[in-house]
Image (cartoon, rainbow over all chains, first blue to last red; front, side, top):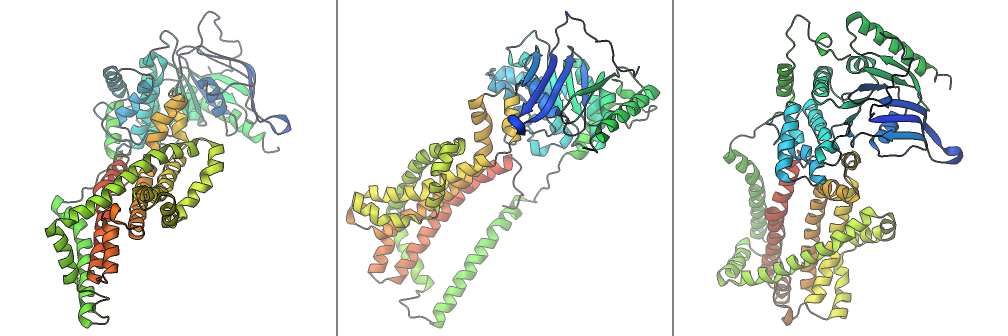
Length: 267
Length: 301
């Protein structure tokens, strides 16, 4: 089960929210340019949960920006056929002047969704992250875990399925180390919550982390990136692992990650 | 490997009830509001210290006067000053003084606002404008606007326009700078999140940057009010003429002309009361409610 994915898992006629072909991204130009990503092939199927694993400098934020459409690649092709992806960051970054519900409504408000619809949608999403009835709280009145759940609800509200213009396309949730700033218990509970919400919504998730355990627990597939420049080193299929199989996968991926990191010691 | 039941800290024997664990965490982690005790005590703890301080000040004043260190025409008796104020109140003249000065300050402040907001937005959003006139605006802030009185009198004559000119030059730089620093202090993650949530360029300004800059802007407004009130008093004090009507500055000037020290003291006290009163009645509550909504105050105000 922990074998490297060798044969391409492609079924050509399926719509894939993300399909990167030899994507590269360099910042600056000429001799001073820094290559952040180099020849990255990455696909995410509709409804798939993919974890991107890498040490610092692997260009994961750059990759997420490309997927989110906030940036353009300098080489290769990036085909994005999802509705506008929902993005979640390491910090909740809630707007401190808005209530929890106000924050969830914000993307809907910016998209011009009428008020009554906004209210209903926000209540529904807060219910999904188990914060029903706390919509009137301000961010500073919430705990770190609750704030991150509000941020998740807000991110989900921003997908174009909810703002109206992208119905029918597969949805995609991008998460940039969303739980790394939380304490261990809260992180554990939120990982469970994320899996529940993933199953409930059927959205595809691209989840960046540097925690191997987290990657194996959450993902169906783990993609290891090298650092400076970021390249795809290996992928593992970790769907449905448990017990000893899961522990083996964690060990194997850990070893590979260590190898990638120690290769930078000489440089 | 989506099987949450078999990992994490829950023992497998336990019933994994994510919902109740989560509810427990929420209850434990939620910041607790420490209440400050009864309303009466809260009011007392806020009102008492300044009242005691003022009482002490008056007591020292009374003692100095009683000791007769200085002649009567230099240091008036507190009672005499109070008599002056009381006479203004009973004759209704105080209303005229307040009206002349306060309506000027308010109009001047409003015009300043209309000029300063677009100016601040331009400086904060455009590098060229910032490099060009940013230092000028900051510099004007440290130039006492009284310095403009002679020029204003020569340009406009002794009339309201000269006074407004001085008030504008006092208030506009403060308000504009407050807005600029408010916008500069917005954490960069917020506009980034706004973009990720689908905001365009103007959406980011309207829904993210402006509300986020509000506390800094309010600080600028408060300072702008203080500057416009100060400049107004200086202008009224220097540029006196019958057609300007009698405001607080003019009243103070008359006191000096009449060598009536108790009248001068009464004038100073009234100017102080108006300046502080408007800050306490208008700006402080506004600022407190904005800050409290964002969790930015300790309750110590």
